[in-house]
Image (cartoon, rainbow, N blue to C red; front, side):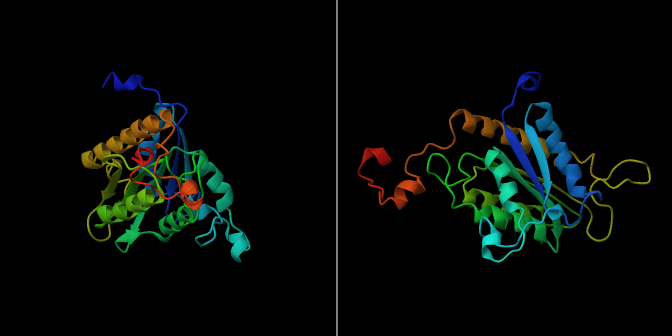
Length: 243
């Protein structure tokens, strides 16, 4: 453990998208779990940012700029410029009716809207980025929600490290949510070893993999370049160049 404390991840950038349905400045339970992961990254030099989706005028749709498709306003193009600079994307949010919130789904759709854009190597835009997921709720559904978010991120081109998800679930039915102050002054869920362990593992694995990818200029651009495919260069599997 002493060895790991010397690791430096400066130069990496991480964005946490919080899909809460609560606008700022009202507190968000999901923000509290995000802060647990974010504090580890901050301590080790990662440039972190939390974007609460509902605070922004992000249009609904699956095009990079919905103003070109009937929307009066759309903040997504500005936000996407920050996404382009990020090495780590973490999709976070609450569970509603056993599923991801509408704000979580909206951000996945808008990330998807830009997945056909290309990076400097002619690959899809998210190649070289890593993805993770944090979920809060007080009934069952963490694994269901993270299956959805992590599948979506890898489909877009992100790399998913081992143990790339974490969450907290309270008792079934009405009750305290993550971080609520209890009668004894403690906060609900903060002492949950399973949540703390998985969040810590996820955060370190995201940083490790992002650092490896950045050091190697992302995923090797061989056999996966959309730019070459569009140019008519179909893969010749008899040619060692494509192996």
